Image (cartoon, rainbow, N blue to C red):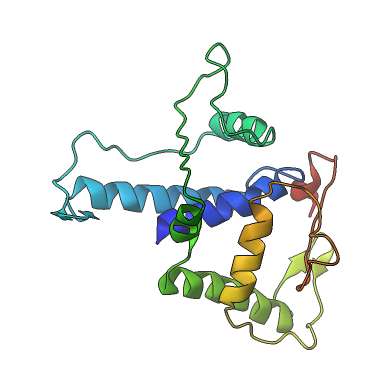
Length: 195
């Protein structure tokens, strides 16, 4: 579950990198997912297609690095399916590619647990906003109105995935757009800290 959540996080954050780096909560969420999976792998609790994998060795707990984040962000902003040139590469990089167009859909499709985790995250924030428990830089925000609980839509997920795969910081063309879309861009590197 965490692996696909990380992919979703990264997809969303590639768009957000135009605005800002990861918040501390986002850093901790990504790190927790990685470390939980690594612990599961180290303890022999992960499965492959033939059964359980053996316990892993030397699978140490990761710590967060803003330097690695900045390096990954800089390269991701180039939106190219290649490694950083070796004379510029300071960290290991993983890339995957396949000629089967349907493979991406199978890998990127969210499980029911992942869908529910994302939905719960959105609905918890929406409930907090509706109840006036969120704040901005000037203090507590007023209670929200007409903030209804969301339900998960595979159709919207598929539409968003298809457009995200274009790696374009733009809206879907109007004649193809069936759903609302939000894009944001700002040149202020301190925007998130001031929000």
